[in-house]
Image (cartoon, rainbow, N blue to C red; front, side, top):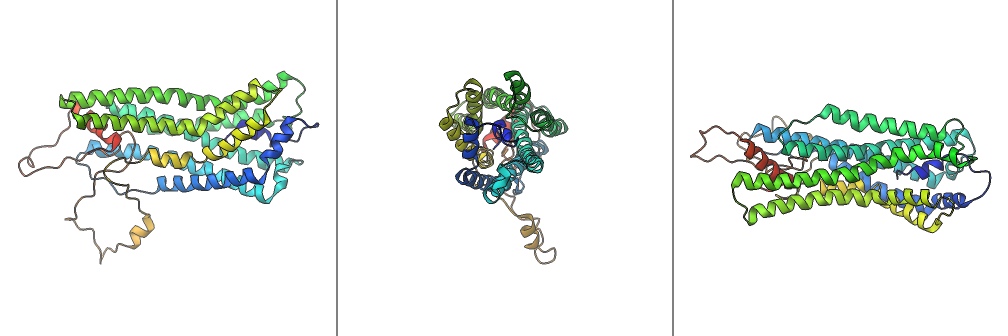
Amino acid sequence: MADPTIQTFCCHQPDKADSSVDIMQAFNSNSYSTVCLISSSIGILGAVYQVLPREEPYLSHRWLTQSTTRGRQLVVWLAVADLLASLGVFIRSALWLNYKSLMNPDSDSTVLFCAIVSAWIQYFYTATWFWTLCYAIDMRLVLRERPGHPVLYHLCCWLIPGILTSVGLSILYIPDANCHNLKSLGSAVLHILPNYLATYVPMALVMVVNPILYCDVARAVHTAVVCSLAQFTSKERGLVDTVRLKLALINLAFYVCWLPNIINGVLLWTLWYDLPSNVIISLWYIMAVTNPLQALFNSMVYRRWTGGPDKVYIPCRKLSGRSALNDPMDDDRPPPPDSTESTPLLDAPSTKSTASNSSLPVSLTPSSHQRAAASSISGAK
């Protein structure tokens, strides 16, 4: 899990016993490490499922294909960051279960190792928050028929987390990783608070900005559906309701995973001199479950919602099962069903030509663009 309090446990032990020592011992228990190990294992499976390639969608227009591919790439990078973060939690928990000395940092080497693992987890979880934000931004751009900015997305999602993590942890650990024996409140604020800000500010930013962006997307979908068809029947209402439900669940999944962290941070800084140990430890167990499970929740909410399940395949098996001589790709093979989950334009509907209009050129007007985008968000046909 990504929490600044746990990162302080990598520091040298305090000179005198206090409530933080009791909490540290609870954090070093076998039960806590086991919970982290199980939840991170499930998170790894969810992230791997999300990263695996899907069957290519059959889309009738180049614009739809480009937008679908563009969205799918964002989901994959979000899953990659989730995978690496869950892997870090898994490794840390496995080591703590088998090597208790790693949580008794009396030497500089164990402090360094603990700090590196904590930085790894912190960095990739921060990256997931920024990818979640970029997904919402890109969905809004698609509905407004504007191009995406993949290079800018990568810069923001990999560079900014690196800066935040390195600055926050450097202030915490440098020069001697002695963050428990600070002599004054001012010293504690200067050494510990920056790492909390580097963690909770981007997390809170996503919690505030994403619902605003998705509300705008929901309104744009409603407008696009009504304006393109000049009617609002039960079919159109069902499409809009599906989009709204999907956007709401995306937000809900993020809140379920990270709201306990926000509550934990508020309690620590408001009740610093009288910490409710049982409440804090309970929150940490909740975070040990919800933080790594973000990958699993994402695989549920960023999927195709209609038109059947996603067709996932393992590339090596697909290649080994097809021979260029014995099993060629038939040109007359029926096209695959409508698209897979991809993001802003998830599952855009295909336009099937008939004998009467097969000679007509295929084009999408602005309203058609928006209608396709609205349909594709929910995977509706």
